[in-house]
Length: 132
Image (tube, rainbow, N blue to C red):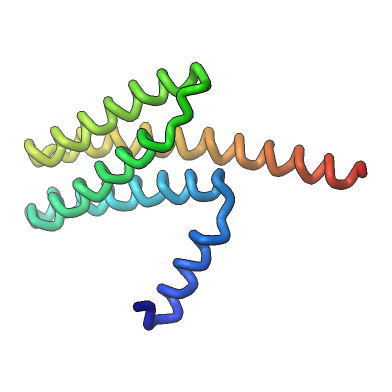
């Protein structure tokens, strides 16, 4: 049950987002949870670190599940995502902030690349719509 206006807005945002926007939301969530996991490690709150790093792993697993294997790039992305999972798992097991930081770096780079792709795709669609 949704009580707060924020939760209602959040659900509406997800339901009305394009596939590109949803992908960016997943990356943002993975980055946010990994950073929260790093904060948990830094403050020695290992329960919070564990919870947040597991949430980041779940998002990466969703990214893997969403891959379209009809395209060759899916194989490369799969390897990257598997490496990210490795980093997140090891960061959690070893309570190693540097491994989590490396995961954030890669997630941020991927997010930025996808952000550009989404902008270009949206720009192309807008041009097409304007030329009709």
